[in-house]
Image (cartoon, rainbow, N blue to C red):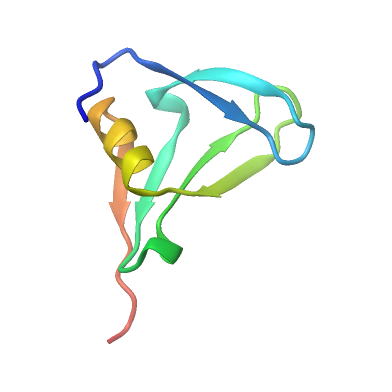
Length: 77
């Protein structure tokens, strides 16, 4: 899946339930060794809550395609 830079994503806050459209600069993507440890995060523009949600393959592809900053999580062996 290829996503053009400048793409906006709809994201919902788990605290206040607001749904906002956010650009790639608002997200962070953490890639873990397993699906359970891979997630994206953003700060809700309405209430300021730090939101963290699991990221499956399609979400990872869309966010990386849009240029979201990504970090690789390395845990002990």
